[in-house]
Length: 206
Image (cartoon, rainbow, N blue to C red; front, side):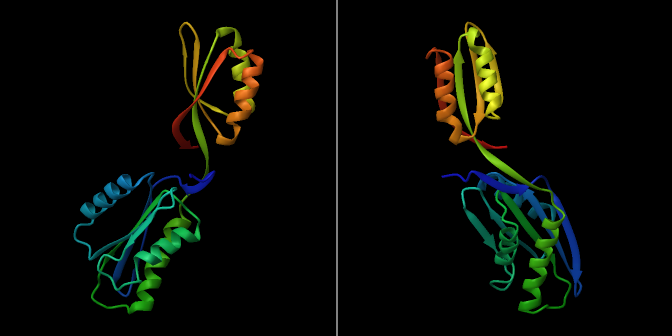
């Protein structure tokens, strides 16, 4: 079951700082599935191919989350990056912290703090969006009732993704899932049942 709303970031951000001659580069991307997250991670690994570590975490709207220390001492990197994502209550986010080792070991405590701080700072610079879940529906109706359709879907703040006019009018709309029954009843009453309203298996966040 997908959540009714999520918080995510608008676009790519990065942030870097040095700690005892080691450089930490935090990079965050919006992602909408595991495949996108892993593809983006591979691109970062290619770009920073000479780095000592590419530690990361991601969390998706489905609740799925994953993290990696990438060779750093257990508990110092991946989970700290994920903690930063959780601190902002974000979903659909990939956060990678690239480390160039500078020759001086930081120790477990300071190392974990460096990864967490890098993650927090890059998220602090990010624009955070709240997105609502919408359900895709198809509406087919005679032209005589088009004004009714527009009035009802506007009332419920629906988003028209596509409209087609041939022998009948067809609308592809995104609506809030809880509004489906109400829209169905109101449009059926206004058109005396001369309308097709079909729920499609697609959901999107806007």
